[in-house]
Length: 228
Image 1 (cartoon, rainbow, N blue to C red):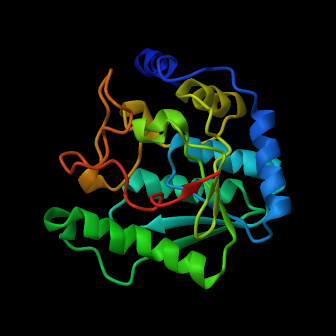
Image 2: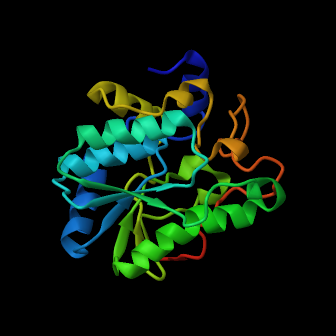
Image 3: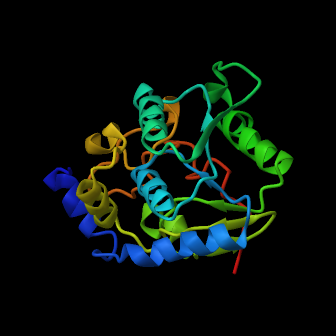
């Protein structure tokens, strides 16, 4: 699955040989504890792992993806492929009311707020979603080094993959033959919209491909949670 280049990178970014059973147990407990819990994904390779683990946990709820209008074609194709694979889950696509324009050039943070953050927050509030399962890992960003399994805020955020390394994710996908984002092989370690996302070079922060030159590493969806 991976080139030698990214095998070396992933080995430098965390422990390997993760036991998937721990993550499965976290997901199963979340399903039991929070009726109405949803899965959110931005379709990074960790997102493909999370969907497979959720399927193995008999999750039959909603999987949410926000189509900002600026995604790579490969991202949209992967979304359709995963939807066709995991038919017991309810896949829904959220979109902003405003059509795509060039706001990403003049005010990229506002572009994220309108096209990505707002559609998801509106959906979660409207449907009174009590908890969200997501695929963030500690190795994906220096700002996530202290990420915990459970975060509390306006709703509970559950992170079953916090301890997984890139090699763990790669090996899991390869072993189970799960579709993953094709641009990962080209160095796109964190997937976002095409105007603001590029490949990561060896030795760089794995989040460095996002929001280049903008002085930030997050779109805003995961900001503001209290940790517990």
